[in-house]
Image (tube, rainbow, N blue to C red; front, top):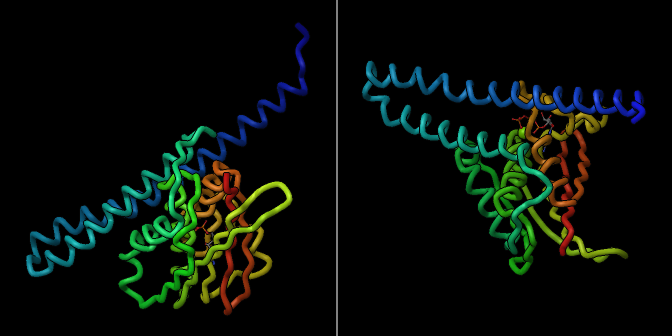
Length: 231
Ligand SMILES: Nc1ncnc2c1ncn2[C@@H]1O[C@H](COP(=O)(O)OP(=O)(O)OP(=O)(O)O)[C@@H](O)[C@H]1O
Ligand SMILES: [Mg+2]
């Protein structure tokens, strides 16, 4: 059989970009894991010397452990193939679950969540993955100093199919127009974080054959529209 040099170099290029992608993911994840584990170690030695601070330090450690398990769940997303386990799930339940999982961030600062999701909307999705998607999007809204976050939904009929639009609107700092195209780049972060949140979001949306649109105005806020097909 004749060798195809073009095809060979295409495969090499693809393998190289896959390698770079996974290298970035593991670098980001190890950064996040270490930044949560290192303080726990310090807290233990603190608790011995300052027993009166034990309760507070235990709470912080417990929260770090919760975040660690979320990060590990996120890491597993990149090992999922196109075959997903989906089940009919109420969108409102998923959104409520996502908000509850962010309690440790929202108790520090008063944030008003306005839930305008129709409790009748049922989607055929992987409940855990869509919850992780919403958690990542909402976490970004909280970190943008928003005081109000609206979550609403609508059902749209296109020529080809029926789609559920999930809209998340915050009144936070917003995103500069010139940076909008960068937010899905793996490792892009304006917060010295690992910049993996939207990479995970995009992967979950692709696994569900959906789309995402982000629009924003500096000092006014950001609007995210996630469209998921209704089978
Ligand atoms: N709602 C938002 N308001 C303002 N900026 C946002 C919002 N969502 C995303 N961004 C911008 O997009 C960047 C990339 O987001 P992404 O979630 O991928 O990474 P991160 O939040 O910086 O880090 P990580 O999620 O890994 O902790 C953020 O650093 C921020 O600049
Ligand atoms: Mg993020």
